[in-house]
Image (cartoon, rainbow, N blue to C red; front, side, top):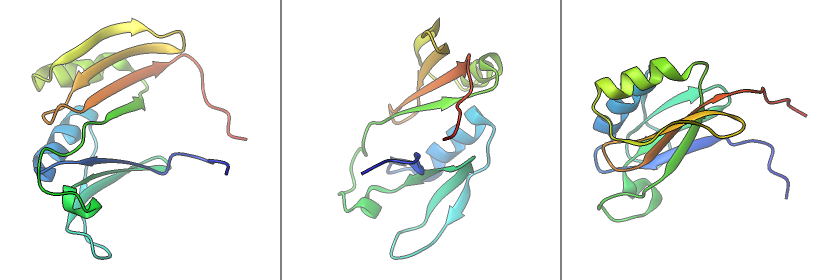
Amino acid sequence: MAISSVCGIILLTNTPEELAEFYSKALDVRFEREDHGDLKPHLGVDLGQTHFGIHPPENFRLPLGQGSKTAVALAVDRLAPCIERLDALNAPQINPPHDEGFGLSTTYADPDGNLLELVELTYTFVQK
């Protein structure tokens, strides 16, 4: 089996609207309400070819609870404005900006404790 790309990033939470508001402000994107299939309403936004969804746990047949903890790594054009937005939201910074060898990286926690890693890449991906 060959994997051609990451088609989606999905976070599970009991508070989809609150988490979507956090990510909307942190990443300067707009989440839209989505209703399809047998799923409960959830929120999503397309980031290039990757869909970023925020769902209640029931959509993955999990009981209501804390939701899963996930680390999401996203490439950004410039790290500094992202840091300013996250700091303004009082998001806890887990790792300060540092060079990972492929770019400058920092990690924050979202309100549910998921990790958000932002990377200012020093190279570009070449699609094969």
